Amino acid sequence: MRFLFFILFFLSSFFIVEEDYYKIFGDDYDDALAYVEKNKASFFNVFEQDSTSTKVAIAIVFPELIRYSMVRDFFETTMLEVLYTQYGSSAVDFSIGSFQMKPSFIEALENYALINNDSVYKAIGFEKAISEEDRRKERLNRLQDEQWQIQYLKTFITLYSEKEQLHKVDLIENRVVFLSRAYNQGLEASTYQLKIDEFLNSNAYFPHGKNYLGKQYNYAAIALDFFTKYQF
Image 1: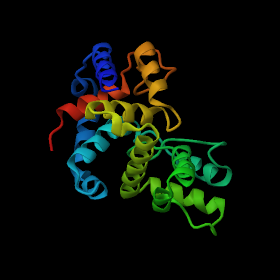
Image 2: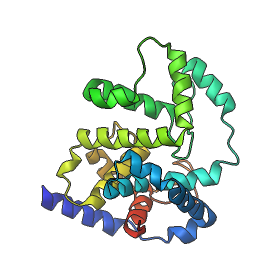
Image 3: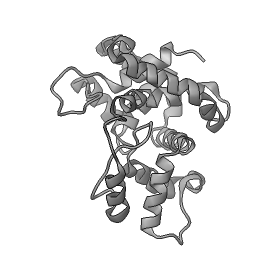
Image 4: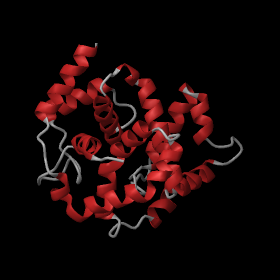
């Protein structure tokens, strides 16, 4: 098993072309770095002063911090928030906050935790008495709060690591790749599906998505590049 993961990490390193992301994203990369420096203490608090876990967590969302810098001046969510509160994520779903999380992503975390990890659910769940509309309002409030976003990120890392047994992955760099891919693609995806997608299709959809025809980049590669270069 260890040998297999070593080979997979070697293959991912071989197929992912090294890019100068600082040069590519310019001011938006600088803004992402500034966010990290400003909020580093909050990450440490949520991740209980564990520097490795904190660095992994920041790496996972670092590409989203770049994306958020790119779109924050052009995206108004007020009407979308009203529609989500009334009709739910099946009617309207959208990215919000520095980590660009969607309401459907939080709902998936809640549902998975409710079934698989009661202690995690207690940390992010709701009182049973409140209405579904009030739950939606509260999700949106949380998604605009930095501390809650970090808590949701920790929840995702915990649940996905348990689901895919990432404790068996010896190389921390591999965990960064698996977690960042899953964060970008969804909790339901397995590491096997993500590896196949990565190796065969390159998955270069960042930052504009699959339908954009211009030059794009690999989300996991950006996260891994940050992880290997950033020093606390």
